Image 1 (cartoon, protein in one colour):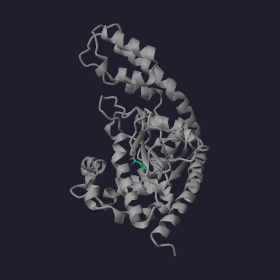
Image 2 (cartoon, helix red, strand yellow):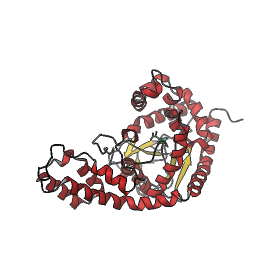
Image 3 (tube, rainbow, N blue to C red):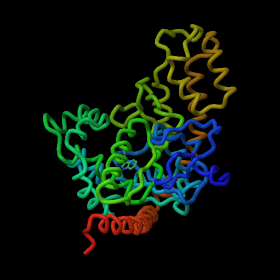
Image 4 (cartoon, rainbow, N blue to C red):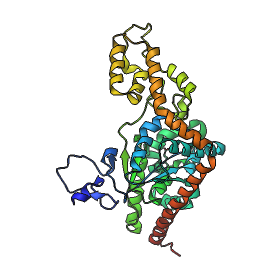
Length: 373
Ligand code: TRP
């Protein structure tokens, strides 16, 4: 059992996680979600995660999820989905945007170090089994339950312009399609940000319902939370977001980074260079904590509080450190921008591999549902 305990720690056996019998283990985890550092190397465990291709990825994605995916690809069998069908649920009127962002997002993945030899990158629209599963699962979910999903609720409120008074059937149902994404590939672990937890919960409910009606067929996935959480925007907003105009993109060039950081929110009460500042309300200090070493952060904090460091010098130092981190990413991205065929080949061969898994699931599902003609 010792060896087994070195795997992912969980208390379920039916989702591919290994039962943890050691009661004196001080890792406290419940069965719905675990922390990223609790994921131990186990190539028998499959991870599925994904993004809607609606824009380039920014440093919020980088610290919130991309870095951990790079780590996880060495530990578990990793699948990363470019969720173009899901992107259309709130961009149905803008197919060009979704199409253009498919290759952009794959380039972002590759340039941060997602390795196509280790991880499978797949395109949702090229896996029809996902759409088929969505139809089957839609019988197992009530409209009221979807309307109560906190993530869906928040998003509907944010998208009033698009949906007006009545949301589309497709958007309301996207948690069902996301449950299809996860189960199609028989994933045990789903690394997501906090905002996605209600979607994983809904997926688990669908799985339980399916299994209770049609017999034990699907795995109940477990959410994996990253420790960094949400990254704030340049303007101090709690969320860095494409639509908020407050993001530093992985593909931003030197000039853009320079301009954006120079305009970042600092302590507004600090007018003169030697006014004592409050680093806790300064975005420059906040980003120093992401990009600069511990010693630098300590100096930034102390010197700012004493009025010994001007904001301009502080921003310049930050820009330098951001560029140190982003330069290798930019270089890789340039390579892929100049080799678009290679990018699409990686995506298509990943999709072909993933589709094989989805077909296996479909066979099991159809057998369970007595649709195996
Ligand atoms: N809903 C996710 C987002 O908006 C994207 C996504 C689609 C996803 N399918 C997934 C995430 C499956 C995890 C697992 O970012």
